[in-house]
Length: 102
Image (cartoon, rainbow, N blue to C red; front, side, top):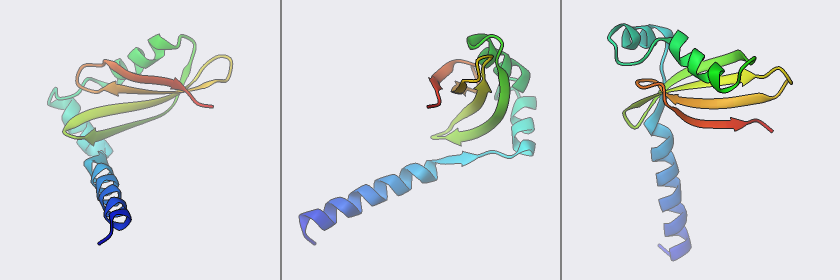
C-alpha cells in the first residue's frame, strides 16, 4: 500500500468512527433519561437557549448521545429573523456552542 492510499484509508476510518460515535435519541429514550435525572428537563434546556437570545423562538430541538455525553441541540429564530444553532450539555444545561446560521 502506498502512502497516499494509506492516508486516505486512515482518514476514511477516522471519519467513519466519528460518525458512528453520535446517535440521535428518540422521544421515549429522551423521556426516560429526563425522568431518571440523567438530563435536565426540556423546558429548562429551552429556557437556557432562549435566555441567550431573548425574544427568539424555538424552531427545532434534538437530543443525541456523542462519546457518552448527552447533547441537546436547539435551533432558534430571533426577532430579526436570524437563525441560531445552540448545543447544550443536556446534563448540566451548559451552552457548548452558539453560532448564527449563514
